Length: 267
Image 1: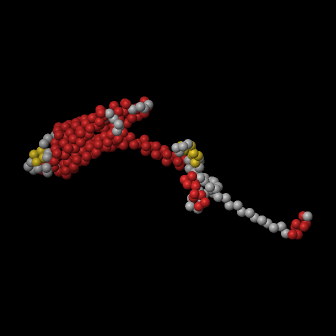
Image 2: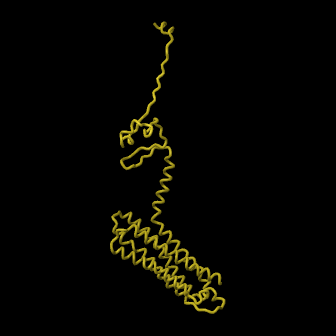
Image 3: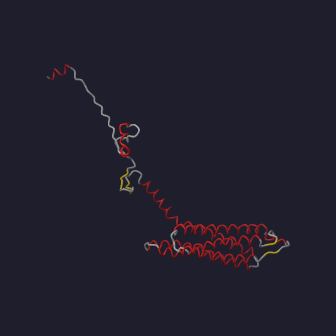
């Protein structure tokens, strides 16, 4: 039981760090996307940042002084002398704060998304991503429930397993939700890679800025040289010389002499 208590103590720190860093990354993503947001967005952003940052601070100081001495947290089952706060109820309160911050982080971009000038389909896709992020709030609420069961259970070891499961599900879903906006670019990259392989021997048309250019993967052309260092005769033409293509053609003339006897016979 001592080893289990040590692992649970360390795991609480890992959980706090994971949910904190995930929420901070999401908030910084909001700030990057809505950098020109109004005053209401800035207030909501800084308010959410304050709540997210307060969570690990409260957790850190409370867990450092939750028991006197601290080792009594995992040695109390041996009957050692010491005292601890009601850790079970503290975890429930902290989980409620965590759930509240999850909801705040989820709702911060909603007003800005409604202001975007885009089609309903695209807005629906954005809100779909936010709805998937809402699954984190559901997992957090389930975790609050099982933590409450844990705090009231006569046998903590029996209730600890379910709490550990949902304490792993919530940060994992948070990481996935934070990565959802980048999935579109990743899928586009995969489509390009698959399309380039299927068009390996066929001409493709690409939009190159000034117009459409026809590219051939297997180019068969006359040997042309862009005269640079070799063509000193064009060096005096300035910048226009670098933009011109000069075709160098070698002509070979073969002269065959007809014998004198054959010329007389033809005459």
